[in-house]
Every structure is written in C-alpha cells, then in structure tokens.
Length: 184
Image (cartoon, rainbow, N blue to C red; front, side, top):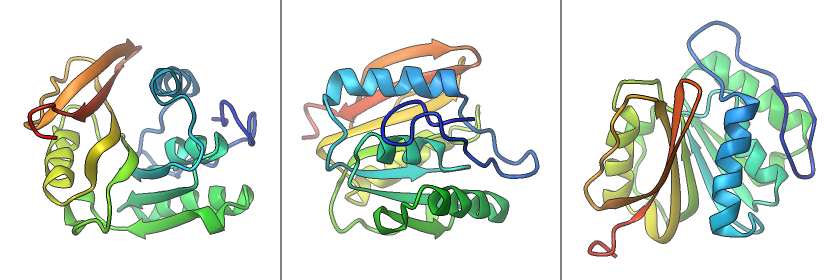
C-alpha cells in the first residue's frame, strides 16, 4: 500500500497486523480521490475526518493532497499503532489527531468537517448508522462531502443525505454523499 498522489506520493503505508481491518487498496483509493477531486477541485485547507480509519490511508491521502487537518478515529489498538506509525513516518503530527474510540461513541462536533471518509466493515450497515449519527451531532454541514466505502451489493440510504455518485471498484462500492437539499 502506497500514497497515490500529492506531497507523499509513492511512500509506503504501514498496515495493521491481523485481519480485523481491510485497508482500502491503492486502485480503490485512486478512484475515490479522483471522484472527490472532480467535485472539490482541491483538498487545500480542508478539515477531514477519517472514520473506521484502519491504517489511516484515506486520511493520509487527503493530507498528502493538501488537507489542513485530519481526525483519525479507530477502535482497534493494532490499527491505532499503524496510524501513529504512518503519521510519524510522514511527519504529519501537527496536522493529525488520533482518537481510539468507536465511531458510534463520538460526541457532538465543534463545527462540521469539509470531508468525512468512512470505510467500515463491509455489509454491516455501520457506515450508514455512523452518517446518521454524524448528521444529528453537527459533523455534517451544507458544504460537507462524505465518502462511504461499502461492499458492492450493500445498499446505501441515509435520511437527510443525498447520493451524488456511486462507483464500483472490484468488491467495493464508493458512494459520495451530500446534505439533501431539503435538509440544508
């Protein structure tokens, strides 16, 4: 696994030991960030949250492309060690916050994030439950983009959010969401 583009392009990422996490592959990450770049234009100065962070590959990709900050949330201790090792290797401590917790235990946000990246276990519905919770707790505002990676056959529907785009990549489905017009 490597960073696809930006400041750290080509640099290797440490993946957590064991089989509790499923890191997003390079090709899937490249597709996701291409989808996001065509909508965002630039990642410069964005506030990013990487939920169900695993190795931190998604958040680190955003930081590599210019995001101002990233909150990494993961509950598995081996994954937390990998995230911290990657942050240290890229000297990204000042732009990163790591929180070892269940995404479902997060409290209200001080302000909405610009980009929320979610890569929960496939076929569990956890990403949709998390998005519903994030919406109610102020993590999502009118300008927020959300990217949810699920299994290819997993349906995605969250009240108050609208699907902007979906793309299948191998066994994964990438879904970009925005605040629904009637919820803004």
